[in-house]
Amino acid sequence: MTYGTTFPLWRAAAGEHWQDYTRHAFVRQLADGSLPRESFLHYLVQDYVFLVHFSRAWALAVTKAETLDEMRLCADTVQALIGDETRLHVETCAKEGIDEATLFAAPEAPANLAYTRYVLDSGHSGDFLDLLAALAPCVLGYGEIGARLASEAGETPYRHWIDTYASEDYQQVCTAVGALIDGAVARRLGDDPQASPRWPGVCHRFTTATRLEVGFWDMGLAP
Ligand SMILES: Cc1ncc(C[n+]2csc(CCO)c2C)c(N)n1
Image 1 (cartoon, rainbow, N blue to C red):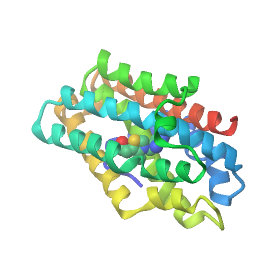
Image 2: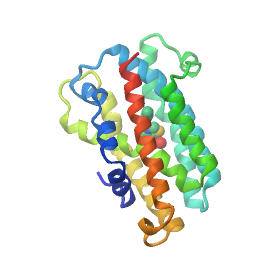
Image 3: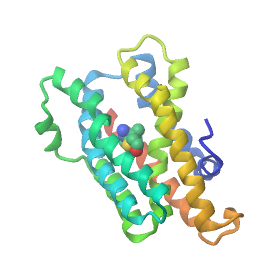
């Protein structure tokens, strides 16, 4: 999966952290079905809270955008996040007797706090591109993981999770976000973005968010 031209460059800049994230033990156990239910539910409750703050970050991106097309895609993402995206979480947790009010009020794990507030700070202290660099590992990493697991995974109770991110719909979201990033880079860093003095900074944000994804999986494995 390349999702445009910028993402492969950022992914390469993240080095081994990208493998640590996308080939984490949590991901392997989702694929082979050995992930303890308790870990999955712990992850899912935290991920619900994560998505609430991610919606806030995409809403911040609407205010940081410089074109109507940028605004539209970010506004659509906010809508998708607070509309459909949390359904997997709400429905799975409801079957386990956890209602949505409990999800919303769940105390945040430190790894969750660190990640979401880092992303929000990237938008507050930086510009639209800084914010996108911090948002990208989450959106595109799950696209890459979903697409890979769809073909690799064996018999697993987590098939629904895999199918969600492997789906045509979600892969299209990743393609659209990849194009948004490419357009934002061209607009702000010019024709030779890797020569821009800002390039190392945006790569650093992408890498930091990738490391925080690793921390999020670690948190899931230690309920
Ligand atoms: C820890 C964590 N990282 C990434 C995702 C995936 N994700 C987050 S927001 C979004 C929609 C578009 O922004 C998607 C697919 C997740 N759920 N939890």
